[in-house]
Length: 105
Image 1 (cartoon, rainbow, N blue to C red):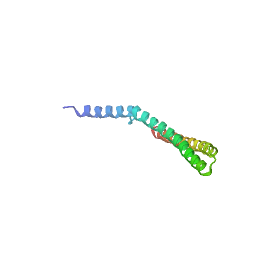
Image 2 (cartoon, rainbow, N blue to C red):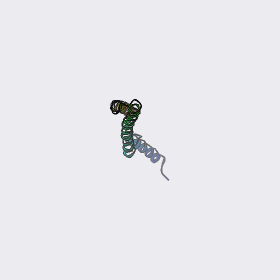
Image 3 (cartoon, helix red, strand yellow):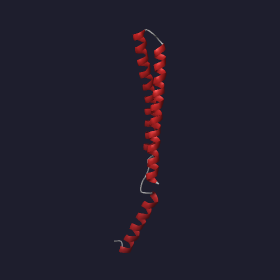
Image 4 (cartoon, helix red, strand yellow):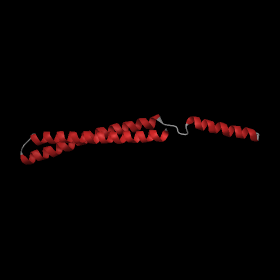
């Protein structure tokens, strides 16, 4: 059976180990999946913007008989909208990472 003095030294050692570890272990696998998820989200936002713009332009061209004018214009507008949403997502992710870094440090 350990002596009372040994128990105190053991508890002090455990506290020092916990302080050295920082109390929080980060998982590189979880971080990698989070970044991959963000990348796919941004690709999907861009492609969906293009497809929605193309569909609206094609529909209006079919309706008015002005094939390919409105299709090209709305496809470009869909691309611009997709890029804007991608940039907003990137800014949101960056803000979240900065907030996480502030909490750690």
